[in-house]
Length: 202
Image (cartoon, rainbow, N blue to C red; front, side, top):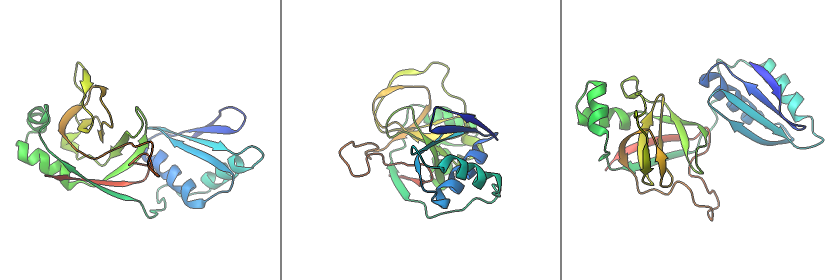
């Protein structure tokens, strides 16, 4: 891991892997260190933003220097189950490339438990880890200019849900009617890093 200064009150931790970043984030969150204004996880990085005048940055560094990141705290994650209509445009392609039937591809996707590794791309979009190996497939060669809100897709090692209509290159498995982002809600984004997610076929 490598720390990089990021402005006056923040530091960016470069991690060798997604698993290491996830462990670092969970460790820092569980410690409840005073003075942390924001934690922003990425695929291979963790941005720590401190409140001005606090010693949160040095406390986080000391914490992670002495932590066993092979056994991060499990915590008590928020759990979300999404009902999904598996009617996506790429479902047959996904099944073919996985070497299974469409029904088996759906079963693979619904039987796994996912964790929100980080968010981004659009408000409410979560990058979910835990995808079975057979469903770890490349993005489309030509991204779509419009992917509808609620579309459930896979891309590389992640699965996720498009919170609003947008361009996108992930393979689409189906769609959900769930609201992924509501700026007027007490918790605007349905997904937050560390949340556990399951998909249920309806």
